Image 1 (tube, rainbow, N blue to C red):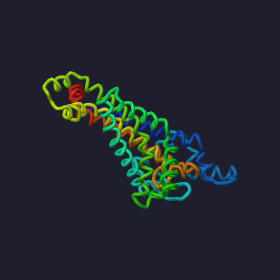
Image 2: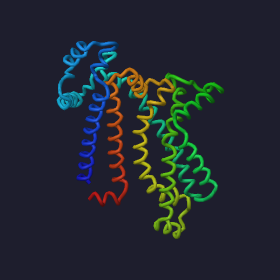
Image 3: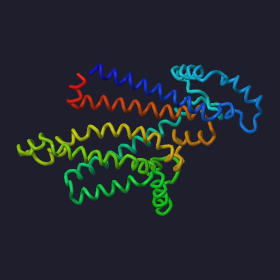
Length: 307
């Protein structure tokens, strides 16, 4: 078990280093950092002076080594536009995005798991068909389009909810619904397929032969095994939601990490873009690692394989 955890942790560190390298190389190759710093109509002398001042004239590997050293020291750089430390900008906004993504994944799980269980319990019936139809419709609906529909109906027509901002909990209702729709179809289908597979297993047939109540078989015996892959997918979807919040936060004008990334991309503020992409990627890596560990602890077959 310990060997497996160390192996997974080593793999996570290697992936994190690869992501940091890709972020740095792509951001420096796609846009000339000196040109982004210089503003409008710079001369070649101005660009050269900026390259010397910020060490942009050094080879790319040398600059990446310095960037990695600063990262390990907790220095994410300074915004090229505001002059504010990037770590402070992220610290002030990460709570908003984390709250939005966490609420959205909880809402998605609260709907997807019961829907998947009911569809599997009535496999082939009208409940299964209705759940499959709704799942297909939601999957075909882009999050930004769902967000616009919510704004038009609940914000403009009915005037029940505010259409922008983040001052009260009511401001988060529509963004949470729009973001949860992103993960809902995959979680529902995975729950249903896991439950169908579990209900056809030998231990479920044995439980039925012993006369256990259907509710206990469904929710205690079958659901426990069916939820294992859902846990992994939920962690992955949470990471994707952090990235997807760029669109949702921009539509609803919520000043979180996604809105910061959108504003930084418009103004080519590369240190902020690098930090946001790296933070979202590292969150995704950590969540994937934790879900692997949790699955190994919950599934006796994985634990025996690890031993």
